[in-house]
Length: 124
Image (cartoon, rainbow, N blue to C red; front, side, top):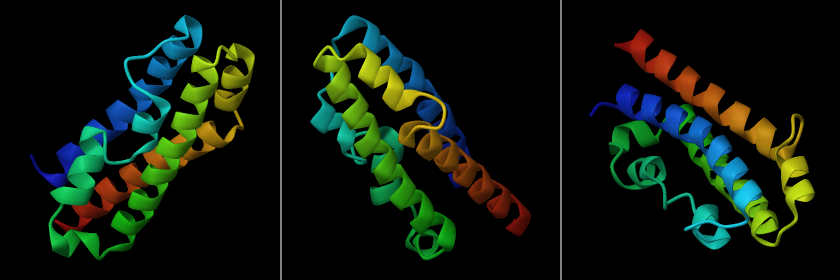
C-alpha cells in the first residue's frame, strides 16, 4: 500500500473514532482502556507512521506535523474515554462537542492528512 492509500485509511479511521467514542459514552464500556487509546502507536496508522514510512518521507514538514497532531489526538481521545468509563457522560460529550480540543484536533489532523496527500500527488 502506498502513502496516499495509508493517508486515506487514516482519515477514514479517525473519522470513525468519533462514532466509537460516542458509543463508549453511551454504553460506559469499551474493550480498550484510556491508556491504550492514548498511545499513538496502538492504531494501525500510528504503527505505520512510526515504523513503516520510508525515512526519506520522515524528513518533510507534513510527516512531523502529522506525527505530532496524531499523538495529541490520541491523548485527548484517551481523556474522553476516561471520562466516559467513569460514567461522566455529559462531561465526555462536552469534551467532544464542536469547538472542543478533541473536535479541533480531529479536524486539524484530518486536514493535515489531506494536505499531505495533495502534496504527494502534486509532487508525483
